[in-house]
Length: 401
Length: 178
Image (tube, rainbow over the protein chains, first blue to last red):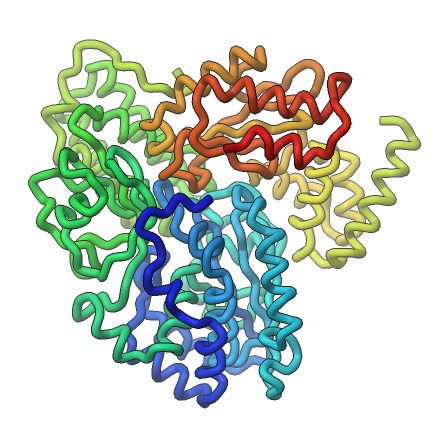
């Protein structure tokens, strides 16, 4: 089902029960210190230090706190969370439970994207088994520790992967992002302190509990520690989920997946950046090219303008429409792409679109709008010769034609 | 809508609200139940849900129209969603799209006159390594080729409507998967 070629090497080898037992043998402060020492950063893409997040939520005073697992994996080119939840769901649930113990929360929620509803019955069965084995419930491992997990389904909205939009959706509203601050660690689900982490982040947290912060921090680079899962698709011989240490170069990754002929690679999905062949020596980590794990390979024959159009159509559709820079800006950039396709965009106007993109990056309310021009801007930057001065309209494969 | 149908829907919504809770946090789960059973969230249903939760019907409408899996308009018994995002696009989604239109006799965004099928685009369904991929209701179909489209559609026809053969829904659909 998962189709993973290289698969989850590290996660498959971690015993989820041992991870939870190791956490329960420690105090809250010790768990938080361990996560902080591992220098774990959020795996969803933003790369916020997990230790800081958990410490803030732990320090917040409230009788009710929440742990939310963001399984609204909607970034184009990303499917590692699907594989994690299929292959090692216990590790994720253990990670959430560990977080609950560490911050003093009794309730966890998995926000699973609507497109993954076929995974729900199996996940519910895993939760039920964990309850039977006292790994969830009122007395975990027979101790005075209570934590339970509920699965809630998304309904097909990419923006709900943004943590405050996700919380809005859980509260029964439109998935429109909130202003931050206040951050969810302080004012989250129903105004209570809430930790929202990616699926892979919780799995990492459990692995750290089982194998120690030192082991984790020794993998990767100074600022980007630990193993990272990559979802690889596009023009390569062996697409699938791969595990690499942070800090691998684009060229090394391409070699591993059989994509050496690539002329460009989109790293970080539609909201990420397009890296041309000339820059394949760059490293994938938080210090250089940052990613939540999406790698889309473009072969030599690909039309990069078509790629840009596909991404912009995605954002025009998925913008929640709340703030003007994102709502209007994305539509304007798509219009510009159509002009380029029809060969009637002046260099001057293209420069203006570039400025518009920069305005969107700094003026949009949430991460969606702030990152939506990235693909367009990087493609315009690196492939000007390819996209300008077109003489015939190319087929775009869109229903909007 | 017949009065008896209205009465039935009303009772079912009452049961779903009881199952999920009457607070607004249960709004989306209740709407998902209505959508799954009725393939639509009618104005009457929205009003009914609003009454139960003590919120304005417009608030329910605003939520229904925000999410692409919730619909105020009637949808087909089978909603076919073809992923159009870049990896599935590069893997050949255009030809699958054309064949879907041919075999269903409708274009994207439409529902067949018999109410069986709705054809829609989906944004990234998370099967990028196994594209082109599509969803039929809750089931995912990876590696779809133009040739396999008819097979998938026929499996749906067999489990619903006058041509239905008598075996379980799930079995019929599984057979179409590889």
